[in-house]
Image (cartoon, rainbow, N blue to C red; front, side, top):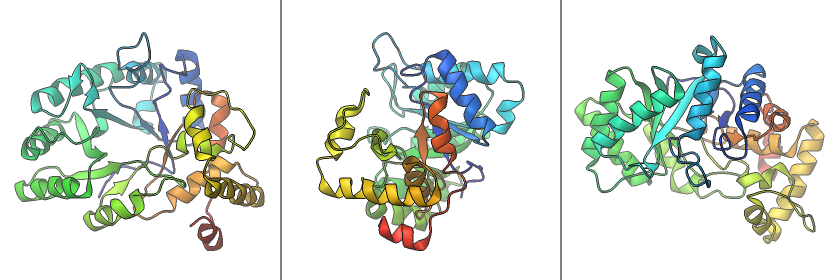
Length: 302
């Protein structure tokens, strides 16, 4: 079981260096922490796919912010990942060792609170993967180990290997899960519960769909608009938005806050991951911090 305190919501760092420049990144981070947020999620690969980027932009901006805000490093949980950066691909021990040093340098910190395998690497024996992550923990460079996008079988195998060898186990998972995309609840959640692993789900707002900005007949100006608009093609999702509207109105909060609160109240979930590209988007996330949905409201969203 994790010993980290993630707070009620984890701030996703994927917009930083992409849709949020340095000034916007600092403003979003300031607003989040000032409101009581305490966890920030990024990856070495964010956002290498953007023209002109090479990867590591998000980590670099977070590191600059940490340096510019004395004392804040001790108040936040920083999570990052290895595997997906084209120049540091996979989970071979040598690559993991090199990648963690790159991330530490960009983040301008001496330790990473939570270090994930961004996804599974079947080409590397799991014994080697488990051993190198344990090595990083023992060296003080990493506090806890996470696994993102693993199957239940491979996650259980990694945990068994660590237990049998007396090495650091995975304590946190990160997977795709939200109100409209729920496969996680049956494919992985039972295994996490059995292993005592907590979940920090990504795509918590379904690429903006669960903010309520996508509606039939409305055009949204967003780089991810095609995905949100596609979800409107399912009548069940339109009905879901109507239910979210009613629950949000009853609590006097945003639709996004309700969607995030629902996710936080699901079995194994420690807190959802959601991002903001402007400080004006942060209050909707913050509204979810203390929001507790009733059993009736959870049933309506089931």
